[in-house]
Image (cartoon, rainbow, N blue to C red; front, side, top):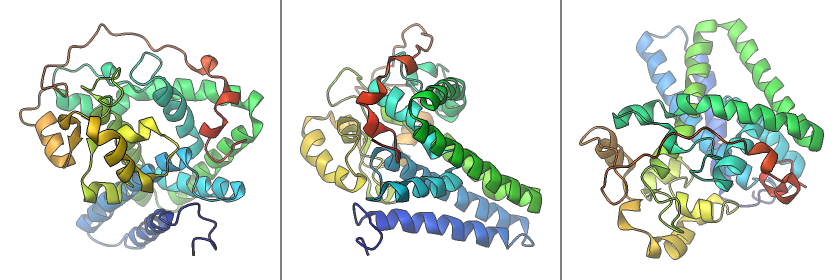
Length: 318
């Protein structure tokens, strides 16, 4: 099966299965529109989580393409776009270039220091909305640059955008209520969730330390559904490594050097302690996080030599 589908790693059969299930769930929800409100709610919640799971596949895909053939990867990104609610190519600038190259610095569009509420729960809940303006600003500037320097990447971005908006328009015309509940709300949740992971993965860590710069979550259930996105430290160390290899690489290269507080077994337990009780904004040593004076975003787009980072462009690579 792996050879027939031209998969680079057989474990991505799980990725394909999750994406297929997203469309199955969407179809089943759509054709149950005459059901009571609580059935609508159940389908909406399920699609929110499933769209988020697909967002983790988006994250993995732009670092390590799924298929051996470039054309297959381009089509795969097109399909993934419909599950996530944003062009997959647009995930490249803010994540691969800004966040990975300049983690937690003023050049990082999604650095955690930009969330500055005294109530830590608000920092997590509103993190996505605080980051959106700078993400979109850098994204549009990056797209304009790529239009001139990498027209193939730009074309892929446009195709994904057109397909997404066409898909949305068709479903909106058919039934605007089902469109909002079963498509737009889950897509919004997926974007909110995947950007929000940056807060609990990096907040209170030491961005200058070779290992303690990221918080890792090693629970099996989380990493099954989130495709090993809990192993964040090794991902920063080797971003091009396939997601299926991360647990073993974490055990070999990260865990022996990592502060114990940065290897969490249960995400829900951590979230409860960090945001509910006691709900304090603490670093990984248990000390209150001391925020530096707020700094404006610095423009990173013009500083990146694209020719040196062709492998970070997703499906459209050199």
